[in-house]
Image: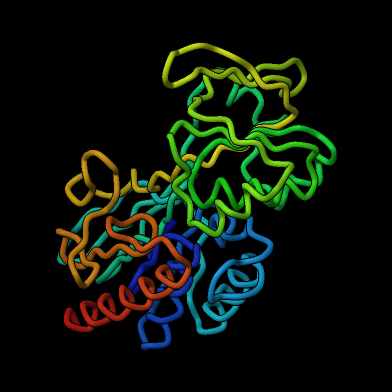
Length: 304
């Protein structure tokens, strides 16, 4: 595959990436937007968005994808493997070749953090799940476990409570860390039972999930919960392994940027959940995308 040349390349077709690609193209730049998997990112798993943006995650992502495509953004289905520089331009290497641009925006987002316990990989799609809206109906009348104490965990527990007989909310902290209204809603729901302070140590079963092993964080005593499914929401980890090591935080893997969202590598920007300092809301993802696009286009134009 021959190299393609663009003013701006956006890596990722989540909300930040699609917003950035649309904005950069509307400013007159030639733009490519690269994504290995399905467009939309984690937001497509949400049937009803909570906050100032209404509708479903799929609708939001689909509308942005359509707007970016109609604006003339080149959509590429490839896996990005690295970013380098040559002759004053940035080279984006993929599993299908390479492309170059005057500026690159990394908007590859983040993925759900794994529990990393025995049985998690073995029972994926057989009781180990990650989308309550998608998979909740499969657990009608069953018992499930949700792991986590933040907003995502409580939101998913509330969704699952619409279908399940009982939802065991397992978290290791003394207190839940979610917003107060979510905590109040969970504690008012008789189908949701808090289990704390415990950690999951293993997921067991035969053809599917049947039990979850726990350890008490205080006295290290062990116990188990009989269940048909487990949903873990213990945080996110950035999808940034392809980015140069020099622009990533050594501990978190997040891409470090300045006020203009530019990294230590000139012409390389980052937006959304992949960057340090990201606000965490959909509004922040869209604002990031627009800001990174404006900065990237200005940088590209300065290079002629």
